[in-house]
Length: 360
Image (cartoon, rainbow, N blue to C red):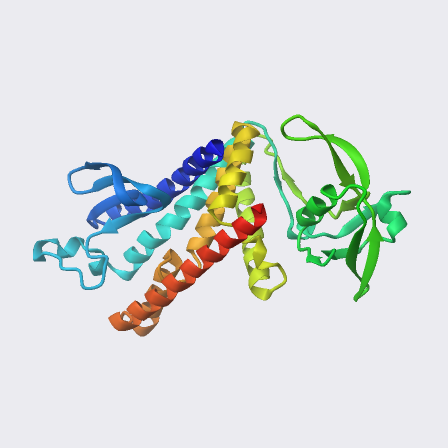
């Protein structure tokens, strides 16, 4: 438990630091006054006041923020400081400041991927189709063959539980050695119910204890892209390609959830991230670094969603301003922010609920 908490705080701390650093550096470049740079929310654990900026470390490690001069609606700014306020900057400069956070997250992931490739290690990027529970082959004399599973079948449910990914399917199979399972598959446009009993196989748990797991004898459809650089110079380009492919995979996943093709139960919150951080840390330095890269891409994408209170919401307002030739009225922005905050809190609550149900 302690390992998970420490891993979670370290991983999230790195991601938040780079995200807010992006906003901070571009704001300073644009000549905007930065009043606060905070990692975390709530009461201060530590702070240091520079020439203008107060740097803070706060109790709740679930985010961070950069407070700029004149950033909030109705904020009073001294006449001598107005030229340095956020609201007085050109549309292009405000856009650059807001975009800098997500871009910093993508650059962090790119730097990690390029570094891994530069030292000669390969990277694997799964295709979305390879994550789906599609049967690519059926072993002879296996439980799957005896139960009637065929190549090309898509597993949609097991014992009434909806299945969206190969991982979800294997988890159920592994946990049910010698237990009869009713597997619903999609075949040739129709649905079939098959009965399969996973064979019992000896294995070793993460703690080194002997255990029995279930296997049914099928393999998944693969389409994973292996990226390997022939030299550090090529790693510069290959790192960008790896970042793009992972970002593309995550965007497709979000679209599938919105379309209902992928269950919303796949949305995870802080408990899932903490657990995955601990697992990655237990597997060595390389795994935890790659995990940071993947979560950093995810954070960058989520922040670009056009939801008020997120960076993407600010960019949406800037786009409206560019089209109209003037900003949206203050009252309209207030209502939009209230709606956005409600949506964000609802999503966080739902993700936390998923976390609890996942580990019950």
